[in-house]
Structure formats: structure tokens, C-alpha cells
Length: 197
Image (cartoon, rainbow, N blue to C red; front, side, top):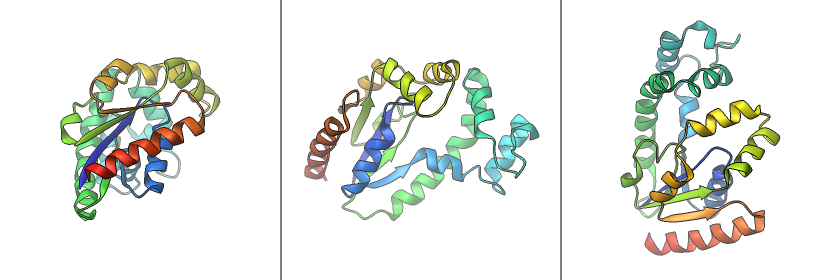
């Protein structure tokens, strides 16, 4: 089994790279997806978040208001640390379950947004960083995700810098070009990963 950490700043296109690796046969473990699962209604994770942040972080249907929590934590490092202290251990447990279920000869790609921030690079055989200039990230967040520029900048500022992410990379995917450029880079990456498997 080859363990590959995949990371990139918000708006870098990491999800697109993850999807393309899944198409090629990688077993993808998506930390964001798991983070949503562990705070779904009825879970101990959601109860812990409500205990920490209050009932007003819930939507009328009882689900977590992720946008509201985001506005709270991405401008306050202490509140972000409190949220991470609840969610990260739960994500770690679920990730281990999924990893244990993967075939022995798999290329397992861990889609981890905060890999550099949390010092996780050493957990992986390879670290792939999807990189894009900050102005490209900002444009994508505002135009495609509908964030305000202030919210987008706050999210970007709460993450590792491009230099910090690149410093832990064994592979860098430059996602500032076209989808065809991206496809070519992912094809080359997949070839190099499958040789190592």
C-alpha cells in the first residue's frame, strides 16, 4: 500500500485532483467528507460542537450550520483550535477504519486540507501539493463558491502559506492553468505513484 497525502490551499483545485486520482484507481479518503460525517445530526461529534459553541450553530433541522461555524473560527485562532480539538480525533479514527479496509496493493490518497498546518507530512510515503497563486484561489472562492472577499481572505489566512505547503511536498501540481494542463500533470503523477506501489 502506498500512502499519499494530498493537500492544497482552499480554492487551489485539490478536489479536482482528488477526483481525477479516484478515476484512475486510487482509494481516496476525503478528510472534509469525514469531518462532515462525524458532526452529522445525532453524533457525539455534533453534541461536542454544540457544547463548545452553543445551540445557535445549528440549523433549524438540527444539522450543523457550517457557514456560521466557519465565520466564527476562521477569524479566531483559539476558536479554530477548539473546533479542531473536537473534530480531528474523530476524523483520525474514521480514517484509520477506511485505511484498514483498503486493499494491500492500493494507492491510498488522503485528501487532507490541513496536512501542512498539522505537521502530518511524515505520515505519508508521498505528499502531493496542489498549488495555485493566491489571486487565483481568491477568484475561485468568490466567483465559484460565492464567498465574500473578506470571508475568502480569512479562510486563506487561516491556512498554511503556499511556501509552507510546498516545503512538505514530494510532488507539486500547478493548478493555475487549464484543465488539460491539470489532466497531464495528474496522469504523470499517477504513473509515478503506481510505479512505487
